[in-house]
Amino acid sequence: MIDQIETRLNLLRLTAEPRLADAGADLIASPAILAAARAMVPGDALGYALLTAEKTR
Image 1: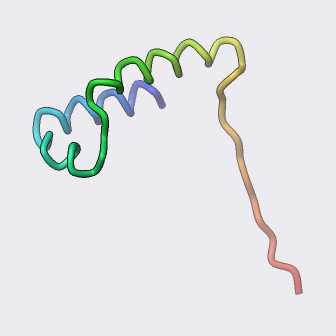
Image 2 (image 1 turned 90 degrees about the vertical axis):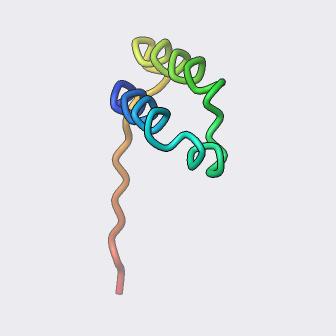
């Protein structure tokens, strides 16, 4: 998932950088944030979660 996010950010940098900036994306900080996320995955500090909800009567 981190790789997908990085790929999409790189594509958006090439095709829509002004829109990313307008949306508040920090293109300078994003590589460091992605690297930190990658470093957290092997130690189980970062992972997936599944949330479900059930409507009660």
